[in-house]
Length: 102
Picture: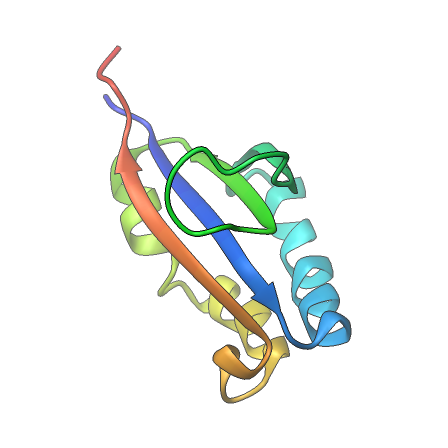
């Protein structure tokens, strides 16, 4: 069964305090095993496309979990820490990718 991945690219953070609260709110979700953070950090260099400041790759046990996780109540509770308009806090792209079948 293929794993699933979230690939997130952050272009700009407008409210570092609220984004930090979001990051703190998601930490317990990773700690309990909802997903594994494979990489998270500042972008060292953009090879193609728009410059991004931060990037993260999250690994989920299955592709289906990666697809449905955004709408889960636990993730939405963490997401809500950024307030009613996430675009006022952070400009980002998050995509779901299906891993190679093992």
